[in-house]
Image (cartoon, rainbow, N blue to C red; front, top):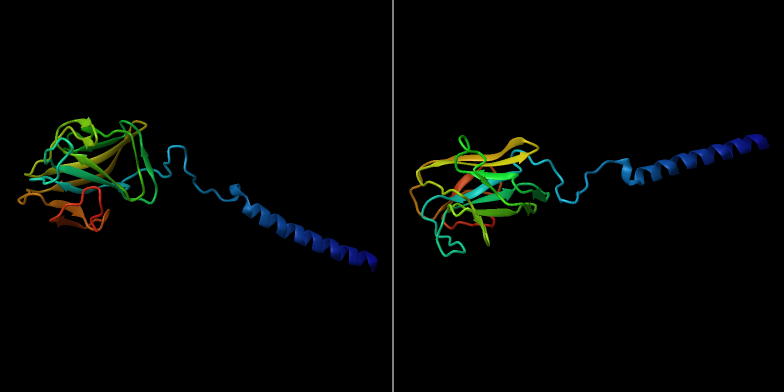
Length: 195
């Protein structure tokens, strides 16, 4: 009888040990792999639609750059909930995506979740207080593209083809930000929400 009681108590201890072990094992960090931010802050594969052309002005811009001239521009948008870290010569913008997809290399940068990057399309080809591409947008219509180059592989992030622009100082914009719904904004919103 004593032996039987000992076996029952031992079974209870094993049962308790088993559940405590499972609990502790499930609480360890390695139990379930969750991607962590690496030193660059990049927590996801950058692919199609993660960075999009969110807004642009291609005729009669009223927006003044730091050199005091009104110029056309393109706004890129991080369409994810993660910070995207871009290295030098990785992110490219073009106004001729079929003929010259790697036309302008943007500088290294960190783009926060649901954040904006404005690029002046003024042919100044400089990074002064702002980013200035080496091309201008045509009011007669053309194609804008954003491309990523990593490890020798070129990935299309986003492209848009627009038609003849007939009204000055309005923007073509995704409304709301990052969606497939394009509209016209009478008051452009560079580096700010289109919503």
